[in-house]
Length: 223
Ligand code: ADP
Ligand code: MG
Image (cartoon, rainbow, N blue to C red; front, side, top):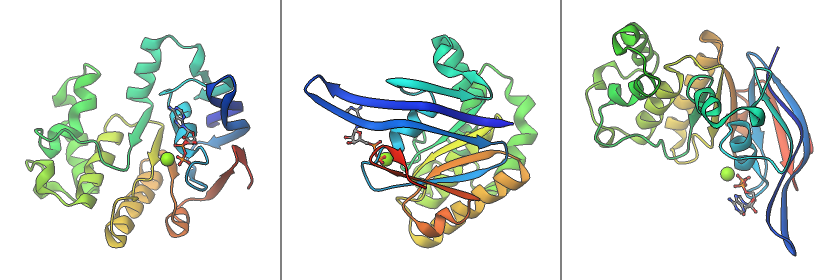
């Protein structure tokens, strides 16, 4: 089954006379369980594509299906719910809430979704173990290294067991050792939790953790 289906997707920014066609009639699918790396030069539209898939922006043309739902046919409330439950976002700069502890950050989606925290206690413990930060559960983000903070943001992305993680240059701000740890964590999550992953990366090495590479150039898939 395909988790993501992108069909004849185009995105144009700007106004008449000054149009910037960033994505040009793109079509592809990602199957459940895949780990896909999206590559391409800076400015080639990788982030734009990720945002369209995550329902954070609207296409100029074409469709995006997540678990067979045409997300641009959903009401704003339904899209918000899909983003909370089905999609886990990971960004380059972690986006943690600075005055909340590690475990409070990880539990944010549970609270936002109106669920009972106690029902997620076991999952929280399991995830803290997977990310290797059980001893830091009561620490604040600024007491952690960049790599540790990114592992917390990944934990937050998976607490509600989404079907897919969308990660935009997740190791772009990390040294190579921390980057490797983050990539290994993605691999573990992909294998053991069965969560599909789509990551944007500039690193051929990081891309190899996935099973497939999609390359973007001039708004089209070249490979
Ligand atoms: P990448 O992530 O591959 O570096 P982006 O998707 O961020 O590329 O950007 C692709 C192109 O789209 C760039 O030329 C950028 O200036 C343009 N762009 C991205 N977002 C916007 C926006 N909100 N408004 C106008 N232009 C944008
Ligand atoms: Mg980008």
